[in-house]
Length: 442
Image (tube, rainbow, N blue to C red; front, side):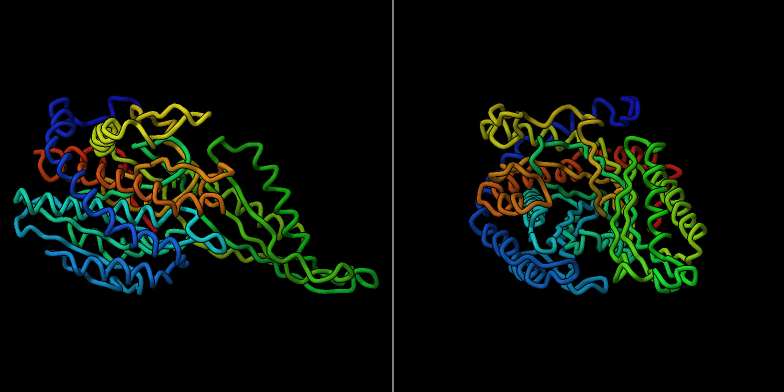
């Protein structure tokens, strides 16, 4: 994106970066003082992994703790979801509403291999610190912490959007983060994706004695699979088509009456995702036409791409780099040999792009969003998220400490939006320009 898309004026950008140096120091001291209290919460979530919409231990641990914090109003099992929650710290004076998302769910068989325990810790510490700063300095506004279940394909944030959670609280901005083994990044763009299942229904027959009496459902699926492979030759570098056969028949001497598969398409925007899905759909229809089988395509959920707020990213970058300098550079991200720590770079559209997907993308189509990527030390195999190696890395005390530093940066960014005149408006003008003509639909 060209630099002229950055709508923050020089004066406002400077204010955002430097308006609260004392706030940042206070935030750092406060979160440091809470580290020993928050560590058992992080560890309990990590050591008790739960799948989407079943995060009962994580939900109860977080809400029970928040209920002990002065000034916080906590609603467990919010918005029709057992494991969603909302916690609000209200100054009692009208002002900006800064919101944080805390993820909690784990992955099948490999636990917290996506580090959602660290996401929860960063958002929890950030929200607490922003509220403490608001209390100490009598700032106007509100801090809202959402417990967002089922990020791993379940779309918990989409259900929150549909329930009106972010509009009910009139949220001005939303903040979250994500760990990985790549250098830290403030301007994170994720891919849009759509999952779906495909079923072919044919007619069984003996594959040797009377194959002409059958309609081979597996042939339909294999023809579609071949068509998808051909389609990939004409797709963009940012297009991804993934899939596997979940049912290919029961025995070789039978014409298969049933075959099924699970598929995903990804693209850099949700508009392109929808185009790619339509092209894939025609491949599956071609399989049905060629084989004589009927095809049923069932939606499995979709996420939008994440459209980051450059206004928010500039603020976060300034604060995080100051924190990094005070820590001697440890954990900002390292180069290939693991020896040269680096800070959050200039806002780089290419460096911050990933083909992973998240329902935070859907949030970014509803209000200005920051999703800050941060480095943690990888495990022995050096693998990133969604690997057993990363599950171990996400459970260390060091990784927890790095998540708290992110929490400091998130809190300081939130305080910028509470205290810097015109910053919320700048973020929303940028947001409206970015998403113009891209109205969100689930």
